[in-house]
Length: 97
Image (cartoon, rainbow, N blue to C red; front, side, top):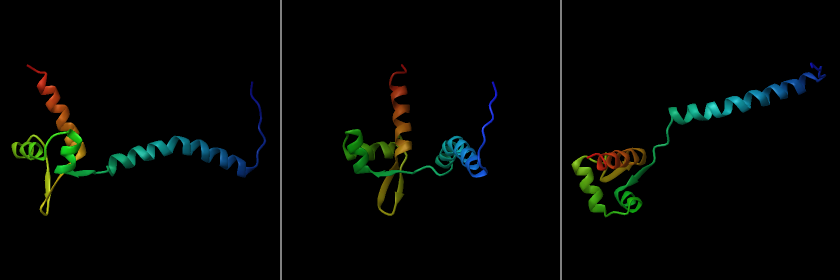
């Protein structure tokens, strides 16, 4: 059954805007997060605290190439996304015998 709704042009514009924005806003957020990812870097000390290991262990992993790190001045920083990816790889290799 079809019904006719009588609205003013302003009400119609408001209805269309809300309908379109509810569909487009999540897509815009997704596109922005993919194009401009938040790069959260941590120091060796913070990474050791997160992983519950010593700083020397983290430094040894960096020297071996297990953990990717970059040097900014005298400080060594580790990207959290790369660190999480490395941990997933290590766990999968650990159980593959």
